[in-house]
Image (cartoon, rainbow, N blue to C red; front, side, top):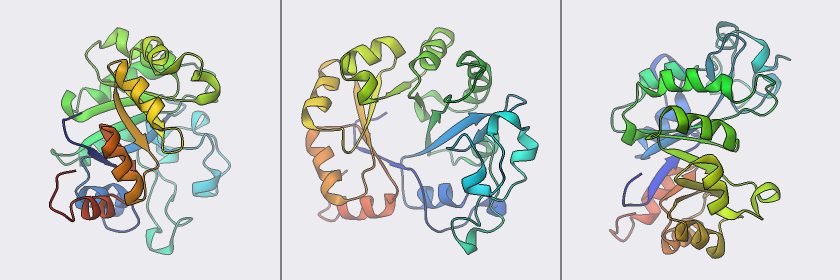
Length: 251
C-alpha cells in the first residue's frame, strides 16, 4: 500500500492479453490501475485457480466444483463465452499464469475463497506461500473473509501484507480492531455500502489501512478520498482515473 489513493481493478470489459487468456486484467493494467484484485480457489490437486464461485457452472456451463477437479481440467474450460461473444475461448487461468503475466509495476490483491472447502484453511497456506514468493512484498496483498487462513499465513510469513474482509453479520460486534486482531491483518476491506465514516474511522483509529470495494461512481470515489481511505476497488479503473484527475489533482 502507498500514500496515495490506490485504484484497484476488479473486472474489465474489453482489451486483449497474451494468448487471450487475461483480457480483464490486461485492461485494468492498460487503464493505469495500481493493482488488480482477483479471487482464488484450491483445486483437487492443490493448485490455485482464479475463480469466484465454488461451482464452475455459471462461468463455464460445466457442473463441477473447483475443489473436486484438477487444475488442468479447470484451465481447459472456456470461461469467457458466457460473458460476451468476443471473449469466447478465454480460459479459466491459474494463479501461476497470472503472476507470470503481471507487469512489474502492477500490484496484486489475491482474495482467498475457502468457503465450502472441507479441507479447511490450512490447505491453502503452502500453495499461497509458494506463489506469493514470486511477487515483491510491496506489490502483494492477500485478503480473505476467512480470518483463520489469514492468521495461519501471518504465522508462516509475519511480514506478509494481509487484508481482512468485513462481514457485518459476523464482525459488527468485534469491529475492525477485533477482526484485525483475529486475522493479524493490517488492511481492513469493506464494501461501498458498509464503508461509512464511522466504520472507516474505527478502522483508521485502530491503525489499519482501509480499502473499499464496489466503487464504480465518481461520487463514491471522491467520498472515499475525503474519508482518507487508502484504496478503492472498481470495475472501471479508467473512468476513476480520468474523472478523479480531471482537475489535475492526484488521486
